[in-house]
Image (cartoon, rainbow, N blue to C red; front, top):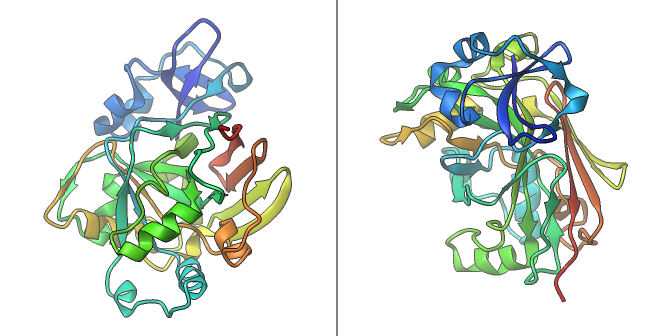
Length: 294
């Protein structure tokens, strides 16, 4: 099943089921409100009224309750550490790492991303994210799938110069990350991906591609993730209840950002650049970079 938040001329954003090239509105104020019911029940409540997907604009699929981002692709982690002149910390191999970022600066497909005045090193990050549907605490990896409502594309926009300075302090990124995150264009449920399963909790064989101004510059695969979403969810829910609407990113797929591709030297993104992140079976998340303030 495929779910989205859509907008049509004269109507505000509303949640919908996407099926066979048609959009069926859902009787909920937001998709986040529907998540606890589970995908099957939410789909059952879709209206018979429908219209072609071409008639709708796809917004960010939901406003997250919280937004965590993991650091789970080994290739990206190794390269990032090499760029900092060090080896990958041995602790990275002991448990999944994640940080909290801003759930209130969310952008969707087609939105313009504001260029922060404080950076000269704007970057994208090609990631996949899970949306939590069923709440839970102390979730075991093998049970994680029943708590995942679905999967979406995640772009963790980054101000690399600011991030670099912050990381020297040892607390992690903050202003280097909190200005923008993109999600969308849809949320795809696990049952729609079952033929792509690699028999690891919450992981599928899905190609991931990044393009800038129409040129492919990065290619990876979700199946190459070191820490599965099952393991990430187990770590995140250890003694903490995950809530409906929590979103957890995978971290950047190998080669999935300019930091890796340019050995942290740039060139970086410029105003007017068009960034497209594509994940097989989920779609393309497209954004344009806005003008940098004087």
